[in-house]
Image 1 (spheres, rainbow, N blue to C red):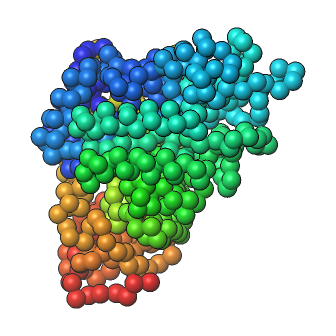
Image 2 (image 1 turned 135 degrees about the vertical axis):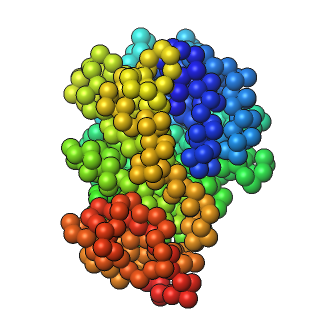
Image 3 (image 1 turned 180 degrees about the horizontal axis):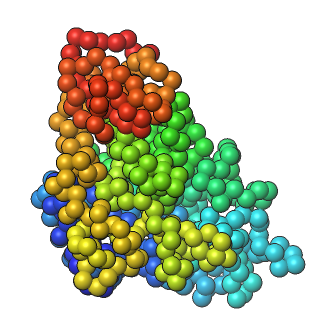
Length: 511
């Protein structure tokens, strides 16, 4: 978000200074990626202590002040919890190494003897590339589905479950409003650790995860039922959001049953191509599956693990990508449920694909043998103001270099420009808060050309999105509430979206 200490790294002081910006943008809550003490081998997702703040970011007192100030601005604060694995620097793992094979300390993790001829226990692969096992000095191997610095915990052990229940209470006692659960689909492993036979870990969406030995196993839901009971003891306003990469909407719905988590990121929508038929199918399947368990749908276009959607949609043309991103913004905000934004998307930032190799920090870069650049390109810090990097991010540069052309995309450059991406985001977010048809509720599809998405939200709002190559006439309406592009001759241009106000009596049957 911003650097308050001058070391080039975003921190709690920087976030506190930008809370008014977030408030005025129109968001309801702020999700902060891991702020715990960490060697930072994976951007803080290698946690060494779950009950403190890394000195890079501030202190525990700074965190408590941030929580209080966020609440003063009407913002809720959600923190990341990383339960699948710890850092190798965590006290537990250091104790496990010292204690040796068969010890209670090693039971906290997944240590196994290798196969004959010095092979690892099975053929599982790391998400970041290479084998998911590392051998220690005494000959045993430990499992790490991510980097070797991130050993997987053994969630069959009651001590592990009790530890994380206590961690949740620690932060709830300090006023956090909820948790984003990292790798929510990965905690439980098949007890026999069978070979997988194939390596799909380099794919964003593996072909199938049915009865997978370490992803999306049914036993994980018992954990979340216990977590739900903890948050409910603090009040009904504390929430969970799951990062669960699963194969089907029906599997995702399992995580948000009434006695489990509250919401889960909808990665099917994020991964969907810019295609009317594909988007409608994802919207219908997502809403339908979640309706069965009484949970709200969620919608997301980008996050810190995927290529920014301006680049995905543009396919090499940033301006086309921004045009489609503007339309996707109105589509997403017109859908029923909740919306998640990734920092910088409100500025129309694209993926930085030409970062110098010497600045790359994602473990994927090393584990892939320098064949995959990883996720650093979507994590470049925000440009706030000025004409030269670091564009107001801080006084000490920025931990990843910003492109010089972002001078045209700074907050300051866009704030008073009514046609900017930032202005469109602000209007969309504020209108979504104010209009009674937006947010929770039902969706009714209307007849439309093949390349157009057209649906109604009650009372009195129609959203049209033209994903085709030619302009289409606007449907009957009383007024234009918001459009992603100008509407010449009463037509909706290609790669554009519009919200239209309609009479309340003008109803269409739900299909």
